[in-house]
Length: 93
Image (tube, rainbow, N blue to C red):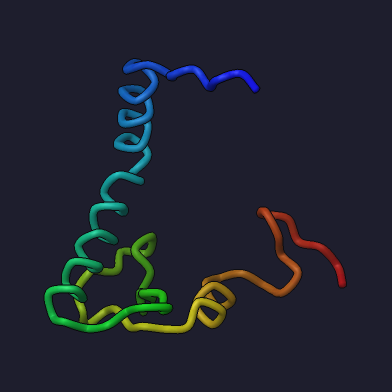
């Protein structure tokens, strides 16, 4: 099995620039801030997802007042996805 080649520093630079330009970088920083706030408050989040009541993509904040802990199944099934939707395409049952 051949070794994977290192993509090089240019790859990571372009990836960072793309993330920053598309707004994904700021959203990731907000998500990390929320995780740090839960850890700082001593709240055990093992096996749970952090759900934003008002999503970050809709202008929601990363404060504890806008977040809640939910089971992964409930959180991932309730975040704007319809049953049968997969990979951005809707399939009939």
